[in-house]
Length: 167
Image 1 (spheres, rainbow, N blue to C red):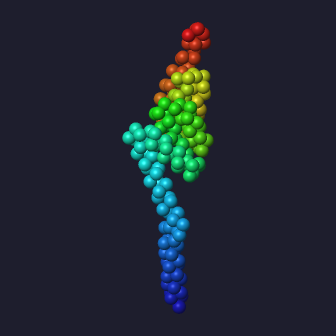
Image 2: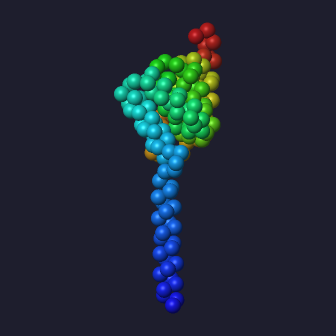
Image 3: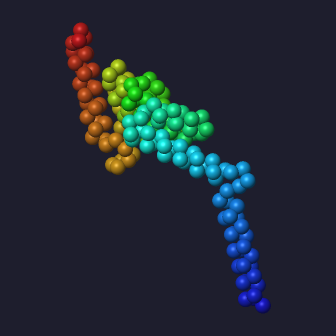
């Protein structure tokens, strides 16, 4: 009797689990379809970026951000595309959004530091120092040695400006 009960219980459990799995694949509202479309759009944005079609990448990521404003990777990709298009201010804003959502924080600060190197060395220094502060380790983004090299360049320029304020 005990064996029959265990088999019956197992059969019911498998049946319920199977129905649950079937239902979790999609629902009447087509949510899985929406997830697939979203993923396809993310892939299209990344491919556009890889093929240097930055305007297309910006358009797709902007649409994705409107759908999900908490997906930091879309801000990061759009920032990179804006930077490639010469929109430093827009890139900086998106890098800040990405870092505020805790995505590739060190890389975001590094990128903002590089952007600021062309505008404001003191601000570049602050961003590069934040990049070092948020560094996660080898293989996790921009290498520490590169960040330190850029920081040294900025500090050297700042020191030259301090020694010779007319330049």
